[in-house]
Figure: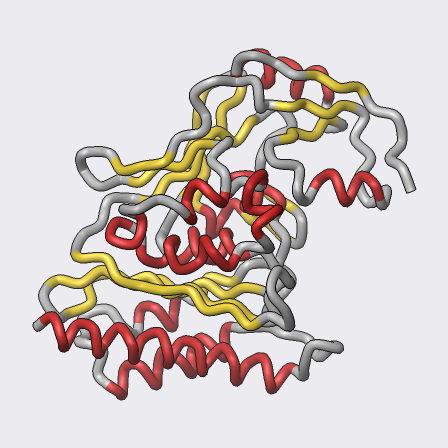
Length: 291
């Protein structure tokens, strides 16, 4: 099957892209990596009247930390750029754990983190990772820029809160308040598959005490789930066994899985609790070894 006809534009600046989005009046789509959009167009699940290819716009392929520790990922930063970043494990361990698990090597060479979050697939990995980190998306429109927390950015399955004339130009992870730690675990039927269950945990420590925590859940609801209550259970504690058990139980309760060919609702909730327990237990051992 082939997509219906569409107008193709390849602007050279962010401003040109925004103007094209304005002209599109909600019927235009932005092409960055195209690893989600193009297959949907081929199946006619998406039929934009205009395709705006932003790959000619310079200066959007960056990723890295500001002097204060704020981490920025440009709209054209590919999954593989993050996967191969040598300093990512130290600066952003949760992102480093997730990067090699995104789809397959072919998709990772073209797909982008910002595009994945904008796509808002409930089975997408990056939205839960960014949510756990307290990350945000920076959108630019005719009236300037605004920052939107990822927890608020994903409005529902394949829905985000971008206005028709706004372009997502970067993702931002705030500067840490302590030493970062975290990980991402993903249950998949085979390499490159969508997650049956995914769990992102991001912590920041002040000494042995958790100063900030975030837990994001993938593929166990109609959209990415920010398990805020479960994460808050860890703050002010030293990752003792009781805190870990309570956080795991609350994360499982926050999940909203459905029984399908991948597993029952009860099974998926069990995996959520298991993954939270596994990540936190491993982090606890690491902190104890360092201490």
